Image 1 (cartoon, rainbow, N blue to C red):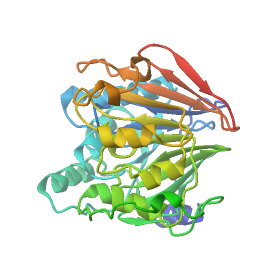
Image 2: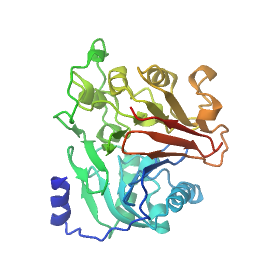
Image 3: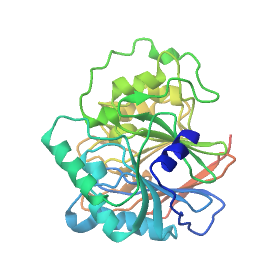
Image 4: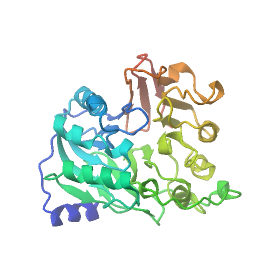
Length: 339
C-alpha cells in the first residue's frame, strides 16, 4: 500500500475520489465484452475499479455495456481503470470509455513490451486517449488505495511477487509432472494480475497470463493460497490455466469471460471443472466451437446465443466470505455460504 501511495505523491496525483452510495457488500460485475475483459469492482465504500475495457469499435458497444453496469452500481465516476495488458480486447475500449464517464486514474504495467505492429498501435491509441489523466505504473506487491478492500498486484510487466501472501507458501504437490511451458514474448505474459480481498472473501484475476508466468506463482510453492472466486485466466484459453495453478487455488466458483467463439477451450475448461472443491463454473457465453460436454448447463451461461444482448453476471460478497452470483439473462441467483 505504501509503495503505491508514494508513487501517487511523486507523480503529483492527489485527486479527490468520487464515491457511489456506500453499500454493505462488495460488488463485482462481469461485463460481457464478447471475449475480452471488463470487470467492474465496487467496494463497500463506493470506490470503483474497472479491470480492462473490452474492444474498440462496434459503435461503442463495449463502453456502453460498461457504462450500464456503472450506472446500475450508482457510479458517476470510475476511480481506477486497471489495464492488464495492451491487447485490443482489453485496452481497445479506453477511447470510448473516457468519452462516456469520468475516470480518475489509469493503472498499467508501463510501456508496451510486445514486438508487434498491432500491439504498438493499440498502445499508442491508449496513450492518446488517456492524455491528461493521472497514470500509475504498478509493481508486484503494490496495492491500490481503495477503502474497505485490498487490491493487491501480484504480477506486472513479466515480474511477480516472490514472497507468499499471508497464509500461503505451502509446497504444491500438483507441480509434479507439470509440463515445462514455453516462453511467451507477447503482452499476455506481461499482464497485471490482482487479488481482491474483502474480509475473508478473495477474488483472483490474472488477466491473460500464460502458463510459464502462472506456474511461477504456483511452483514449487503456492504463493497465492486459495480463492473463493476465480476469473479463469485468458478467457479459458489452453495457453493458460495449468493444473498446478488452478488446482492449488481450490476456487469455490470459477467464471469464464469467454466469447461465443473465443476461449473456454475444452482442455482448460476440463482442468477448471475438475478442480478439487469447485462448486460451480459460470460462462459469459456458450462456447459454440466447443462441444456440449465442455459447456456448463444453460442456466449457468449469461449468453446462450451468438448474437446476444450482452448479459452479465453480478456478484455481491460479504466480509464473512459468503457471496451471491446473479445471472442477468435469467434473473436467477445462487448463494455460496461462508466457510
